[in-house]
Image 1 (cartoon, rainbow, N blue to C red):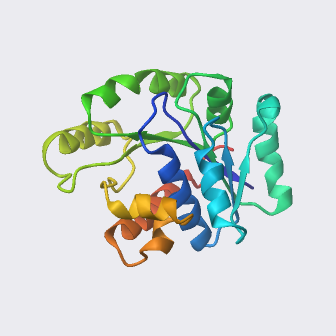
Image 2: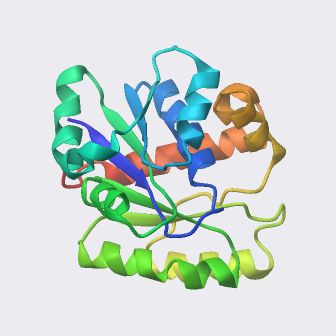
Length: 214
């Protein structure tokens, strides 16, 4: 059975693609058979995949003309040997985003610790609640001292609601370096703090999603 994880928020600049790439690699390194689909017209995930080449992690552009078939196509991936699918969506309220949310085992909502992001994410959360979809925020691009200030306030509020993934993801140069090299951060700097964050984040997502409705 394929578990599908959709990175979604109706706002650009939150780090969806960077998270998608490093989570895909972390899942692969944990033994999953991973396919990552790019639903964003900007094509940043596919561009990363081209840098990466062929190594067992499949990265594809999802054909826009088939977006209406997305939930069915995700269920069929198991017959091809995949165990995890990661969907990178556009930062917009459109058909592709809603189909990807509906197809998800779990939606992952990146949010930066800013008032602007907190306000902008409300339509995404409302749509997820209407669809009764399992979801969690990923507090992303936090300052190096995330336990202080707005990041800590936002983390406290989201955790109280039961919707916060662990750990918070700190803004580190390794993430951008990994993307530019066509790698996940756990490959680019495997002993670094960013790599450990991403391994922890994948373990949390993996545990939370097990037993979720498919």
